[in-house]
Length: 159
Picture 1 (tube, helix red, strand yellow):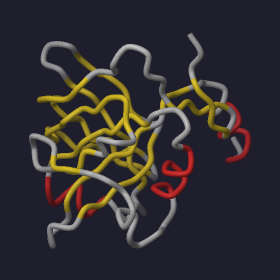
Picture 2 (tube, one colour; picture 1 turned 180 degrees about the horizontal axis):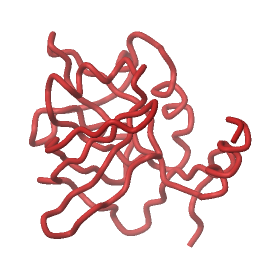
Picture 3 (cartoon, one colour; picture 1 turned 60 degrees about the vertical axis):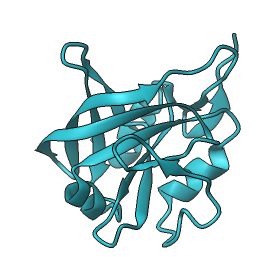
Picture 4 (tube, helix red, strand yellow; picture 1 turned 90 degrees about the vertical axis):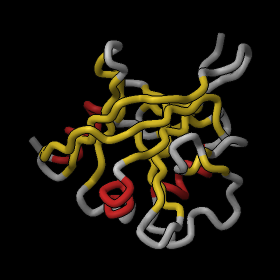
């Protein structure tokens, strides 16, 4: 299958948008945009995140062995695009604070977050799958809306 057709098929599934964050060896924050994340198990609480093997955030994930999934608020497509880029200092104008595992929580730009400890790394083509235990976090407050992604464009959920 050609790459364009594969992306078009995968783009037919609307998803939320998350920014996965970790700290690198120099204790600097790193992050990437992903919609390739999902719950795996309720007992124990597990989720997975898929990360491109060429990601600049991959070394930080492997170093820290933990991360935060920051579920973006509606209207934050600009932030999602920036974290999807190769911009060297993605956190320059971003508010964040350490989550309970010490990893960056983008508290002003998110409707929810999941605090995760990596339990397994799996090879999957040009990506790695990180299986992680969710140890903490916060769900969306009533009335908040997520950033959504469909057919390579951003939108929002309407009640």
